[in-house]
Image 1 (spheres, rainbow, N blue to C red):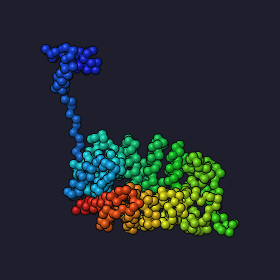
Image 2: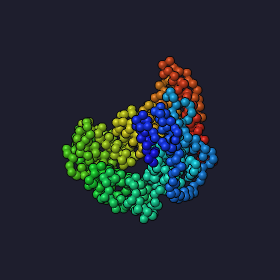
Image 3: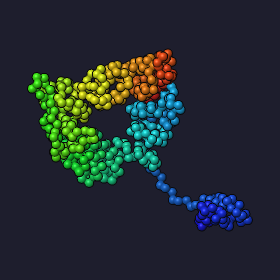
Image 4: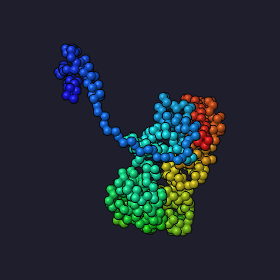
Amino acid sequence: MDAWEELVTSALLGTDRRPPASPALSGAATAADDAPVVLLDAAALHTVRRRAGLRPGPAAPAPEPAPADDRRPLPEAARRRLGRLLADRAAPAPSGGRRGAAPDLAELLPQWLAAANEHGYKAPASALPALLDAARARTDLRPQALALAGPRGLWLAGLNPEWKFALRGASGSAVLPDARDDEAVRALWEEGLFAERVALLSSLRAADPAAALSLLRSTWPAERAEDRLMFVDSLRSGLSDADEEFLEAALSDRSRNVRSTAAELLSALPGSALAGRMARRAASCVSLDRTEGAETIVVEAPHECDAGMRRDGLIPTPPTGRGERSWWLGQLVESAPLACWPARFGGRGPEEIVALPVADEWRAELHAAWCRAAVRQGDAAWSRALLGRPSAPPATGPGTASLAERAKLLSTLPDEERARWVASFIAAHGLSEAFQLLGVCAVPWAEPLGGAVIDALDIAREAGSYPWSFSGVMGLAERCLSPDAAPQLESLTALPAEPEDASPGAGGYWSEAFQRLVSTLRLRAEMLAELTA
């Protein structure tokens, strides 16, 4: 070791300042010009000696055998398809900003994983490393990828530190104890990492909500504020009146974020005491005035945010640019159960209430609060009333100020009704305003939505519209259109005649984009057929 340290010192200081001395190289030249050669020769010799003289350490214990996975193996064609999808997930983007006509396999991987899991398949052992690498790189793939990997994937993840995420974030997976094993559940809850505890609570909540709540109660006073916030947020799943007592107590929590989340959950329970308190406060601020002949909604916003309101989750300080009174009013109305308003307005239904005029320019604030309440409470009737007709201009619905709000309201409607509404919206306004709305529609797009998207793309192509502005919709269509639409799109793959005012190169782009769309839809059809073979 002393000789090796001498060589390292010579290399660091330089051979002119510290010439190497190597007794092992008897007869070697020691002139200054030859010193670097002597140093490298000596280093090579000592490296061999060090390796040859290394004593082997004790053997590590062999890992436990991988657990059994009784699910069906993939059909051979589907197994090969998975290999190609995983190999293409990190393919470099095409140069020049154009994707070409070939399908983007990386974007099809999530759908393939979801379909394979629906059929109850297991991943082949040879694909597990690539599958875990894909899940590590893309968080959106993790739930489906880990489900397909199954218990063997989790076993393998335990042998590689780069895959530890699978052990910490696999909610409902085989890494978590059985919900009926009280001793194992208690041990993980008391000794596990934070992410493991969150996963355990979510898993137990899905299986036995009462047991999950009891487990949370047992350690609640000792939890950190940031942990309490995550734990109370997990109660959204399976929220019921049985949670009210715990959430009511959480309104006195030391953390403002915990108090706000508890209040939000309680306001989603129309029969809760907090919902009743909010209903009374909101009703005192909003009333129906008949003195001017025509019935009008009159608003008198709160003049203060008292201690009771703050305890029930109201945030007293408004964001920059918002007035205090309108800020407090919005929080009260969105937390009040929507069922309290028909009685307040003479038995009117949601559509009639939304149609009433509102005095003193309070309409936008009041309707926006009703929008948030409809989303929070999942009330489809109020959502329909606030959405209004699809033909109405995008930002002037009866109760909405933006397409983002309309998208949230649409998420409360049944899938088929949502598809019909968005199809009518596209027919009236085109695709440029519909991107956010398409994102909340169920996949594959049900008719008439698929046809409306195709027709709108065809109109844009015929008009020579700037093609790159539709790339986002094209990407959605590749993932969301039904594969049965491929024959309908064949005629659109031809190079169109470009109008004089068309964007330069638009025809070639549209042809290429439709070719890619058709080939992607056909590939999706092949993938599904392989999984059902």
